[in-house]
Image 1 (cartoon, rainbow, N blue to C red):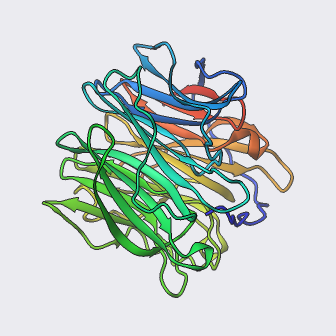
Image 2 (spheres, rainbow, N blue to C red):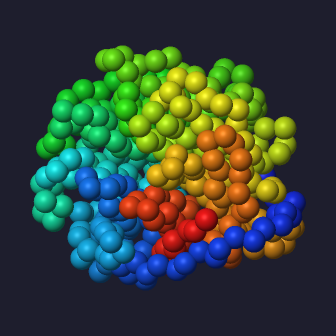
Length: 385
């Protein structure tokens, strides 16, 4: 998962940005030196902002809740753990239900080998958290990671992750762990035998059930984005969202992101097919059973690292990284796209060196569309139409 293909040398300039309202800077409670920002929704729809914060004992997983434009006091989930601080391995803090919180993250206990492990912790009040527990049965020194988490009903949560039992030379399996409210493993199952090994997973819950987006892999090394759904007690077969037909023999560490509201689903992703690096988005109005034609949202030669959120009106906001010109800075860009595939002008959120921008994340909560970015200094802003 960490043998990263540095995706292509980017040389094409970004087209005109257009006239859009500038993002409004929003302060956040992450301390200087923090990294790996992420968003999720609280039980009442408020935004949960989480991050890794550097402390005297190493790093701690912390979070705060934003409600009515104000932040709660930050809380610590886990401290002084061997967090794997990679942009693709982002921790997450969720409120599964009232009085039920859960967090997950990846640990790398020995930097001299490839072993990674998924851990979870739970809480009834979001303040006191249980001791971290490994979230999978296998304990061998191989890679387990690239996880995502969503509530799956009945007080349980579904953790989606990748497992590489045979190391870098073997297949990566897409797996699901069902966890109870205490973080104990209820069930573990294999969903796909051979997927792209270093691309993050993404999961959302529609009104019909769970939908998972991931980068699939064929024996011919076609690595397009697929979705599988859990409806009526069973998993669907994987469905390719859009036949980009991206043939690549290395893993691009650049996968899909997914968002859902009711039966409305949006999936955004990066592809380098036809030697045209770009970010695309596709909509589904039936919880992922079918998708409309994909829309390209990037305006030039993109880096990718897409993120997507669905707003109250069912339209999407997509963010991504893109370079200006051959030697210009990297930009954090965002764009509103409606469900008919009509895109509004591009919004420039920030620019600078790629490592300083990190992996941007967008989120919609209470009428606010928020974005977070930063490799060592986390910044947040409110996006406007």
